[in-house]
View (cartoon, rainbow, N blue to C red):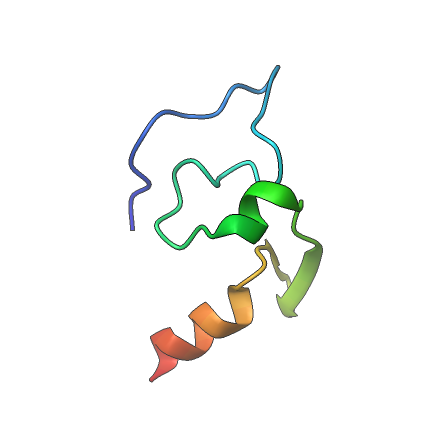
Length: 60
């Protein structure tokens, strides 16, 4: 899925998740907290507060 909107400034990124201004799944938590970088499977890492929920929804 292509992210719409403007790319955040690398010099002055938005607070919280850097993609919160473009992500269709962004919620208030995304604007307040930087998500933790974690491994979802061998060699596959993500930084998203909702990665487990979104992955489960895609698999169903």
